Image 1: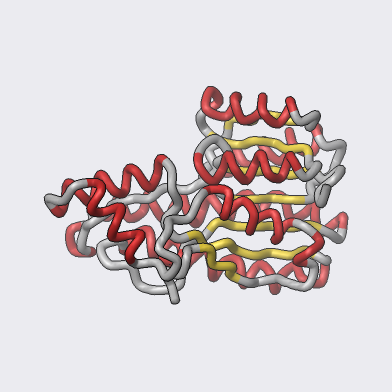
Image 2: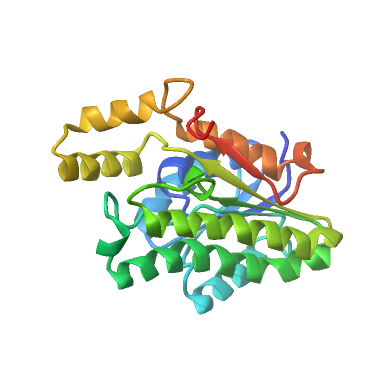
Length: 260
């Protein structure tokens, strides 16, 4: 097991890639704290982790609220006897879709930036004192290929993912001397509830069928297939294991060749 005895916090662990990441990290030997707003959605994931023989602690937390994040880290340190080895920031929102920038409501734009950027920054801020003291740690953020290139009609989301990539690179410089690796995994479209929502939203806006939108995504990839949640989990596992010991500040793209 690549992560035997490690202690991990995962935000947004309940669905899709978040669940796949959580279960993969636990399967490789880590105890986990699951952090999110929906306790009921996280409990089945925690149950699956416990059935693997790992510790799973569920903490209700809004990662955009600093008092919640401070409490999350305190509870994690209590559960993990003072250690935090891994942080994976998955929590985020999609925001407006199929919407030209001049039609995006300013409050909707702010909400996406708050969830995706502030919600990544705060957990990083509050776990780092422990990792610095340990002189070790792995932080992996979930970005997106829309943070590597422009993404038409998705100005809020694309802006947030560019910001997450910039935050990742800068934090990597801040903490490298303490043996802390900070990287970002950039998924393309990932099969699951969020993709279904996107397909339905685009289909409605365009007057297409959901199947036509789905096929458009497939046709835009070099491999002619949609990414699965486990593909993302495998990349995250690499970044939080010792296999990536000499990588930091890097963006790892997992998109089937959409951004080629």
